[in-house]
Length: 472
Ligand code: ARG
Image 1: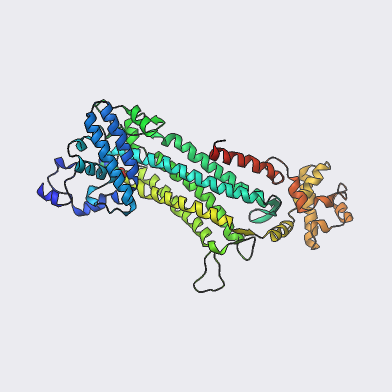
Image 2: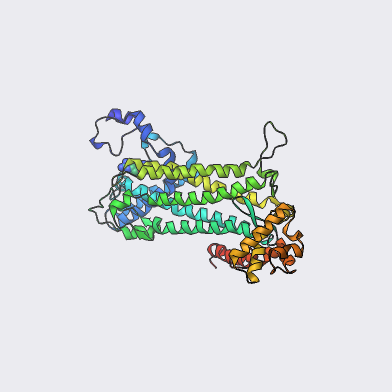
């Protein structure tokens, strides 16, 4: 025992051991260097637990009061020093044992009662759920701010026409507003997914104890109420085995990153000399150490690049969990570093991309000019023929022939004479010319969700986005 004390102190679980933990094992198994991030949630959980123990008469009121006092002190000390700055002694293993051992230092008698009817297995599940409930609000708020920026930019670009693409080939003219609103809609789904995951994350695990529950007369409902949990885990074995909520958060974040990455890719592409659709402000680009002329879209590239690490975290946690027998296994400690990395990655990206977007200059003339090129109005001609009574398949064929003729004669559609048009179909009249402009094309696509009803789309999306933010 004396030797054990010398070697980093006696472990709370040391009763059945005769030898001290090897230093290498302490270093290998510790999680305090990263799970210290859970400290405020861990202490909140302990406070609720202690209150319940004393309410239930499992500990006395005085012991309960001492424990609460001690926990407040520990919380304040951590808050003052700021948890990131604290070098924790690795021999305390994890944040749960740190808090408990500090409490015992303050109150050697009552402190030893805090861990009654509780295990680190249900504690860690509780802490991670509390963390994710909090972080999900942060992330969805950040997404909302970004959506609002996109909507603002869309509002002033209702009439900015650009080429819409399929297969990276110019397809049909759309408005810049329409294109940006596509991202707003994607981010809206991301928020829905996060909100849906909260339904399951918002479940109290504490009280499951090691895995089987307890013989002591605890009150889980009171703890759920105190900590603001919507429901209590039904099965104590599941409560300590489950990391679905971690996987869901990372999976939802992967989807968000996929969306951000597609957007980043477009920013990279659009800022090339070849496209020249946008100029990202100097403040959000970087230079080359050798080529003096360079201005690189590194922020967008890094957003695209960081998608890989978020997907990596998803595969890591899925793989960690895939063959774990019930209930708790130490493997599960491996959920934390990838999870924290995902949290850092997305909460760093969202404010930066938001700022960057506010500082993008759109080259509207060039976008408009490019939108008109490459027979982007061919579908308009086909739909014109449909309105004159031609079956669409036939109209498609006729228009294809017109396009072929234009290619062979180096002309654009609107440059054909009426006689030339009539060679392909008698149904074409001189009203075709007013249809063959990008403005008419865009305006005409008034179908629900189409590029011609962007004003209404803005209203619809704005309503959804604002509703979550303002509650109105
Ligand atoms: N540090 C552990 C984790 O993060 C806490 C739970 C440990 N439980 C145990 N019985 N060893 O998963």
